[in-house]
Structures are given as C-alpha cells and as structure tokens.
Length: 228
Ligand code: CA
Image (cartoon, rainbow, N blue to C red; front, top):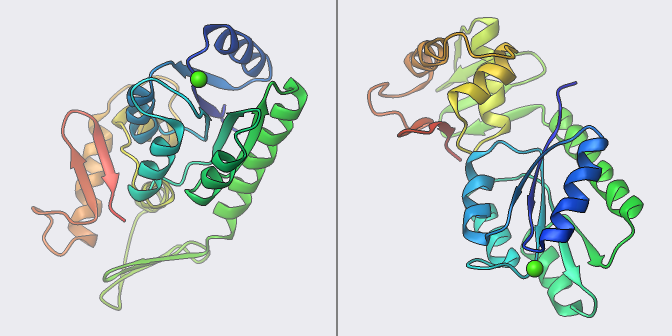
C-alpha cells in the first residue's frame, strides 16, 4: 500500500503544526496550505487521497472550495473542520459535498478515526466501481475490457492500468511524476516521457480524433486530466 496523501487546508499555524506532526507520525504524507485559494488549486492538481478543510479561510472559504471541487468532478473525500456552534454550516457543508465534519476543538483520536473511516470508504467505493461509461467509451474494470462505440479495444496491461488510474481520478489534474509513481510504481522519475508515450497510445485507441482529445486532456505545464 502506498503512502496516503492528505491535503490540510487550515490557517491557524498552531493547529497546522499539531495536525501535521500527528498525521505524519501516523504514516500519512501531509501537505499544509494556509490560504484558501491556494488550497483549492492544490486540491485540483495534487492527487490527494483526502482533504482536511477548515471552514473559515483567507481568500476562499471551505464551503466554496468544497462546492467548486465537486463541480469540477473532483471526488476526493473532504473532512470539514468547523467551529463550535456553526450548526448551519455543518449541514450546508455536507450538502455541498463534504463527506464528514469535526467540530473544533476536537480530540485528535476522533479526527484520526474519521480520517481512517473516510479513506477506508474510498478504497471500498473504488473497488466496487466495476464499470465506467463516458460517451462512446465503456470500461469494465473486472474483466479489464474496453469498448469504443461498441467495438472491443485491445489495450496492453500497462495501458489498462493507466486508463484505470485516470478514470478513478477523473476531474483531477495528474502530473507525469504522479502518474509514473502511481501506475509504474517508480519511486524516482527515470523518464516521464514514458507517460507521454502511453498517453499517446491510449488516445490513438480511445479518442475519436487523437489530435483533438476529448477524454484524456493535456493540462499545459501540469500534466493530464481525464474528462468527466
Ligand atoms: Ca480558520
């Protein structure tokens, strides 16, 4: 199992330190961001497994971040941190797509338990996702079969793994390094060109017009994103 990445968006320096220390000691990879707008950008592009999101933040509040992420198709679990008495906000937070919330001040053990539960649920949900359809593309994860326009498409094992990873993280911008590490499993990055080559092959096989891809999009300077 790879190290799970948590994005912590919180503007209280003391709380950041405490949470960062504790989450790291539990084996999580933690990135902390203090600014809401920056947190939103990282959530879009960082390939995180979970986001711990404060409600009141400079430049972009937690509710806006969560709503905008869901609108962009990012399904990363969100655990909201709310202050005592923000009952209305809690309800709204869950309605706009947050997965759970914890009220400040909270017990560290409770927070850790909630995080574990959300990560576990995510793994189960992904395992249950047996097929995927978008436009003319259909993917069956269980039989590792792919069809375009009803016609079977032959993919190599690596191409299928890459497609599966892209689909599972659809809506997220994924860097070449992230793809290499997650799909190929390299700890270092010997050659991110490998990713480009496989993306090109997938496009040849899956896209209506490989020169104007509609499924696997290039995000200039950042990497790739699966539409949807
Ligand atoms: Ca705050």
